[in-house]
Image (cartoon, rainbow, N blue to C red):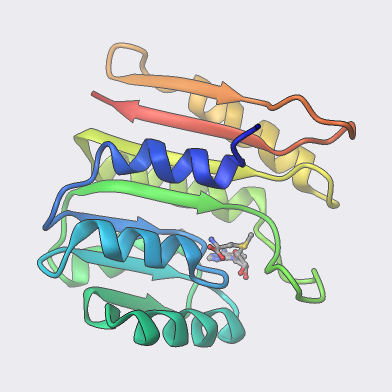
Length: 189
Ligand SMILES: C[S@@+](CC[C@H](N)C(=O)[O-])C[C@H]1O[C@@H](n2cnc3c(N)ncnc32)[C@H](O)[C@@H]1O
């Protein structure tokens, strides 16, 4: 049976995480990745989670409260493009992991979605803060309008990173449709 990419991303990222780590969920959405990160970093760690939609922040807040882990998460109702400013305001200058799950909020009107410009800004900020060992995981969906361009921009950006420092791996699963999601993993070992 094929393991869904979201699960593969969690399994891969989990290998890097330790209690007390500082991590970022760049696209909180319904909070599944935020909750996964919050559980993995324990009560001494901190998750910075971003989303531009109030509905996403509310859904994530509820999920974290129900799991009893909300005190380890800072929910930020703003674009991930400004992630360094938020981390710096808390004197955080290095992070273990950043997760991106691009596209639109599942179940929404699909109007508000990630875009290449802010995604690349956030990735550039993220790589500057990334610890070694550390990991950036980007799940990019290519079926919606703008998704293909965004995935291609992320891949070009990742492939331009110095190979002496970063290992880049791109996975595109076999799919029945012509636009499968793509998973871009950047590791600093
Ligand atoms: C595919 S969903 C994320 C799913 C989420 N990781 C989860 O576990 O449920 C993508 C999210 O990115 C958000 N988004 C769009 N542009 C953004 C931006 N510039 N900064 C942060 N979040 C953004 C959307 O509002 C949407 O909720």
